[in-house]
Image (cartoon, rainbow, N blue to C red; front, top):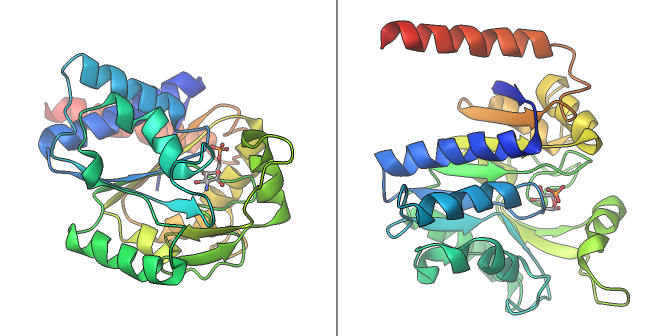
Length: 261
Ligand code: GLP
């Protein structure tokens, strides 16, 4: 796991976008794993700008989103399909037929099975973008999720429902069930970028980077992945015990790369 600590949320987005740019430049047919939540919005903004400038094209890319609420129509403003259209897909040249979001409407159990097959047919995910919940969840894999889980239905914790309440209007139906890629599904991605910003994520970041591997912090499963980059701002890094070490590693890796140029 590489831990990169930068000064601001905007720098988190810029660096995340650079990883995406490098991947798509090397492989224009890349399969992207995408996330919702407020954290990746700035990264999506950067990708939109890069595409507007002609630096990147998503024409041949495929994308798979992590999760979707059960019981929200894709046209519902709080559905993750709607979120992705508004925040990214409507503004880039990706073919929407190549953008997959789990179907939380018809038969979620069957949708989960189908989703796994669709990811496999696409050849797997090249780069998975992740945020993290305050309780350490990734996608909607809440604490106690099996570390070998696949795409399935999950019940959301009261804390997650409360955290996401801000997106719903008062009295609006807020689902308590979701369909989410499993932890094993996520770990099969060739590369993973986890982004976190702000002090409210500091504990989750500490647990996922330095805590024990445990279903109590589902994101700690990333310790078992050999190509994960955790990009965080100073506030999200504030509870890490070894931030100086992570910075030293990055500096030395950069120096080595420069010497080899
Ligand atoms: C939701 C999503 C997660 C996301 C999390 C954190 O629960 N299912 O994928 O990481 O929220 O969201 P935010 O970035 O808004 O803090």
